[in-house]
Image 1 (cartoon, rainbow, N blue to C red):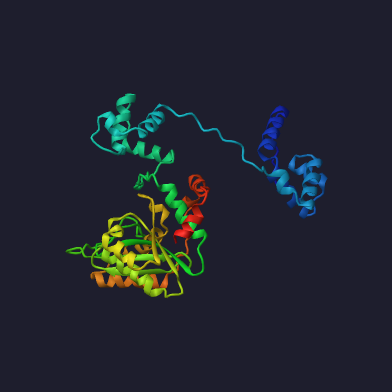
Image 2 (image 1 turned 90 degrees about the vertical axis):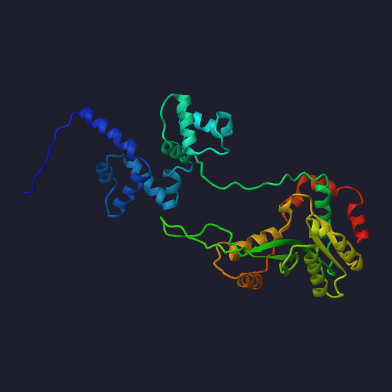
Length: 366
């Protein structure tokens, strides 16, 4: 005969247990339990008695399963708002220090380190804090240690006008016209160091050459096809730029009546020799980018791709082979069909385009 275990629980304690059970289990999990018991042939009365719930709950779960609304009825559609706990003195002091340069607090440095933050907070709160505590709190607050990026001042007074002019040429480009984004790229035998996967606790070592060697690539990104036309030379001079322009004119025969080349304000682009070359080749026109505005030139992204695929962490010992890798990349991994950058559609550029006669005067000048 099976052993029967019987315990005596006061009625008021049973009511308390039942309230706790319903509060923690009521909803989606209870509905799933009901459905599983229904699938095993149990009646609503048996289920309600077994699960200590009402028969109405059983029928409601059954109906929700039948009409496909089970998830919507028992599962919350939006999470309850979570209120962040108030910051304590340590956290407030830490976040306040990060907004100010270390020199204001007597440190001869430009960036905060965890050790400097810990010492400064300890001096202000009269409580000793370790740098590891600071590091953990920074991570908890969503801070990461990462490299900053350089930002050009981008204050050219002709910025909007130049961008509007380039945009007008793009939007009115004819079939017998070509349009290129142009720039130069340094190719160094000294590898550009970057991130890559490596076993934990180790660090990849990239050998440096005994003496660095350089070559320079002048490239033109075709707006329509995404192809990069380029020349490579030992010096970054106006001669290299003129070689690129000559390559463009040779590549495109008399069928192309006009060749637009977008270039920055680097001195080799504005040399007298370049002006003389342009005078002898009137179908080539240079459109100038605003000063300190690299984001307006999509070829910068293509050059970044060259660094990622060819020059970053490379192990070539001879510059010739590195240049060969770059050429293979340009041959096999293109085209680079980038859209016109959003900077050309900013409100001030739109306002410049509304200037009466801007587009028509540009076309007549061409």
